[in-house]
Image (cartoon, rainbow, N blue to C red):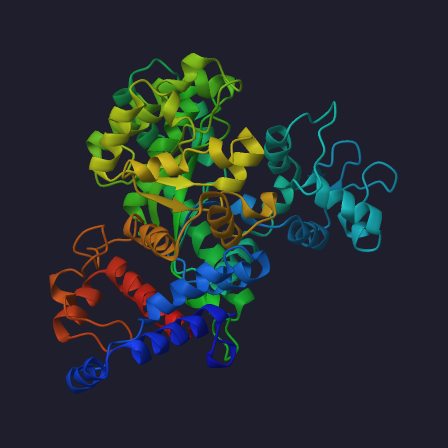
Amino acid sequence: MPRTHRGLSWQCLALVAVMAVVWLLAPSNARGQAAQVVAPAGPTAEARTAAYFASIRDQPPLLRAFLRAFPKGADLHSHLSGAVYAESYIAHAAAAGLCVDRATWVAGPPPCDPATRPAVADALRDATLYDALVDAWSVRDFVPDPAVRSGRAQFFRTFRLFNAASDVARGDMLAEVVARAAAQNVHYLELMLSPDLGRAARLGALQQWDGDLPRLHAALQAAGMDEIVAFGRAQLDAMEARAREVLGCDTPGADPGCALPVRYLYQVNRVQPPERVFAQMVYGFALVQADPRVVGVNIVAPEDAYVARRDYRLHMAMFAYLRERAPAVNLALHAGELTLGLVPPEDLRFHIREAVERAGARRIGHGVSIMYEDDPFGLLDEMARRGVLVEINLTSNAVILGVEGRQSPFPVYRAAGVPVALSTDDEGVSRIDLTHEYQRAVEQFGLGYADLKTLSRNGLEYSFLPGASLWETPAYARFAAPCHDAVPGAPPPAACQAHLDASEKARVQWHLEEAFARFETAY
């Protein structure tokens, strides 16, 4: 909780005492001269907040409370289906009348059988079944066994198990994730999803693969890609309408999440035949161009899977082809979600570089294998120069790859000047939230308060929100020219207000700065 005057830390009191002693020991004429000129200014609100943070950084409960209230710019790497907690999926599956196979824990439609495929609703009355479902549909209490031998295996298998539940509750899922973010003072979300519900891939399956991308592109357009784009937009409409209903957005008791800006990234499943993967990419690019709510395209599924490895360079070539025709479409690509032992060493040497240089990704998700790349320092320099942000997912990197603490490249990226932002990846499956990721970063990497503000600001500066930035440069030293004289917490000058009105990105960034001002005033 913010520290008020009634809860001044001992550090603050000690600072006041030291200043008083210094004044008393000074020569009387010096004290008089100081009084005649000007009293020294006290610490700024930011400095007081930083001092309090330093005093509680080694006290996890207090650190958690501080970081929950701390204004966070964005969560840029979050899969909607993986962001929902298993408890919610149980409720959705029960309401939809789904069953669950006791042998595999896969949810599916009726008929149910009390012995082998009980109704999920039975779990609401059977604590043992309920706990088993939570454990199966997340990494809670995971212990490797012969059937599921690693955290990576458990992490990825959960999606297949609760998939049927996610298909029946997309609006409720969106409401859950948005409300959780707003409760943590997050200012913007970019969520990965597939609103076509597999239609683009099925359209691709009807095409003959021959490697001729222009021919296949034209064939997909002629086969009805526009109709699938319209279907996806309608799915987004329905999902958002349901989420607003759940959050009570048109009532006096509206959830704070109603005001949270949310945009989407279309996710391409990379572990399919090339004609299906390319069809999804074509669809994603078309959807971005047709609907401003969809601000970019990503590629997902285990990067270490056989097809993902076999076709990696082909996938990057597909992206390059489409970007030549639509350079304004943003790419945020999963790349380097790998480590030694998971794949042969040769697969660690080029994935991030291909995503950056060939596909033209503006952001990289995970990027764990950066130091295994050929000429890693040259690649780091290039990413810093081009402003390619890395979305850092500390908990999922630890669960999936076993990479954390000193093994993490997070400090390497920061030292090289590559922008980074903390994100959750799949907070429901991992049983975390964005506050947890900030706390993990503080505890593992010794971050200071200024570091936290940079991470928070990076989330908005490198988001795919449209419009010019609030900042003159990404160093965050000065607002852009129209807002040079603006002071967060006070009405912005007319020129600055015009800048904010013209840019959604700048407007959300301004709201973050106002939130920092309010947050720091409490200290």
